[in-house]
Image 1 (cartoon, protein in one colour):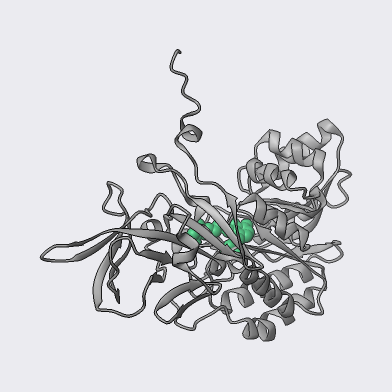
Image 2 (spheres, helix red, strand yellow):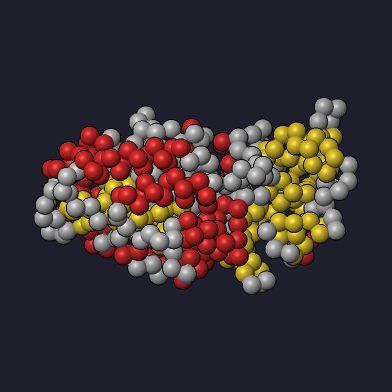
Length: 411
Ligand code: LLP
């Protein structure tokens, strides 16, 4: 979606200068075409299986995007009351909602008993006991999956690994087995599925082979317990480094799909980053090129309040200057906030941009706008969607009124 034509940066073939002309920076920009391409690749990988793709709304919760995804038959995975509200707001049928989270409150579980989602993933024995108590009190039945923690290393950043036994998510297989036995034929709480999500930004196949292999053995050990689905989570990584190391779909098809097939159950997927990560960019503008005896800093109007991944995880995002020729420099690309960690890249070698030129931070469709904040009283950025060659504002930039509305002066 990002290319240079005659030294001009374009997104979906529109120059960034044209796109940003009447749109104050910073803003997020998404490509619908890229989202659809990504979904097509998932579908091709699962061809021949009984599968259901749900989008992990935590990766991007823009309501217009959620609605567009719903309209093309993609389900939704939610992790909070807010995300559940969003799903309802855009018209999702609860029967298409997958529910996650490791700290579900009583009121949220009550809602679930009432709405009957497609699958409620239960994180722990303690949560299951709370749910059972409420189900009995309300005399309502519910279909659930147990989130199991297969204890495999997803080989990713420690903050986004979830399937190791030291991580807070899920339950070990022995606990799952004893719960399945205990709740066998329970009149209200029906354990019908297993859920496994081992982490995020995974680019290796082996952790999936190991995790699903363990789950397959586990399913076989359950004797006659009738599971009706398996939720294999998400976590597929994207090529942030632009090094050509993409998620190896062909290997996945050859090595992982056969294990999933053996389980002989309908499959639910919960992908976030793979669907939308490379379909979004953050567009900023250069305020200053500041030269010191030691460094060159390009100070942009975008900051860690708009995109926190580089500050939080030290993550790499490719950065595209408006023009791809010119003197190359080793530059630090930083934001304007009062914090040293407010930087997108250090000593990056790119053609040196000039004041007022645009700068684009790639692969920010997932975990970008959703993790933005009002730090330094920044206003969260607008979001635009390019679809069929048109650019539509799908969320305005916050204004000062939005973020001060709680304050009533006369109090
Ligand atoms: N399912 C569950 C239970 C999850 O916890 C997650 C992500 C997903 C699905 C979707 O994972 P994906 O396909 O997007 O990898 N803020 C971090 C990522 C945190 C991921 C949290 N869980 C980042 O910016 O890299």
